[in-house]
Length: 109
Figure (tube, rainbow, N blue to C red):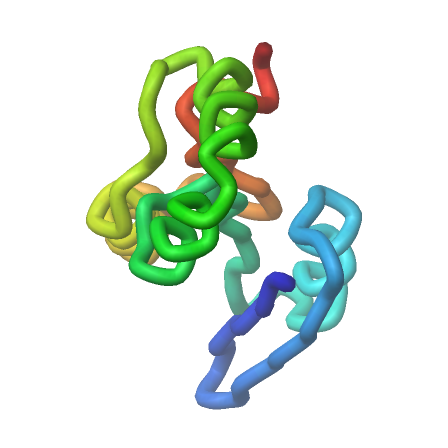
């Protein structure tokens, strides 16, 4: 599940989607017009308590997930937070309408 939130000219635009993808980012960008930016962060499998608990019950699933991870590990929550902070920063002011994959190379694999 993904959420899209954009703030432009003091107005909040929110859209919920089943999957974060470029088409959704483009739709959000069109909704807010020239007064704001819309980007998305598309995380891979992140090592959260929920994921750890789920995978502890299914050791074979963990082996499969790790085989599919080019980087050889799960992501960390702070890595996703860093991507979000960067997109919100002035350093990313020219990044518009982008779905940023933060997935350890999974989508490029």
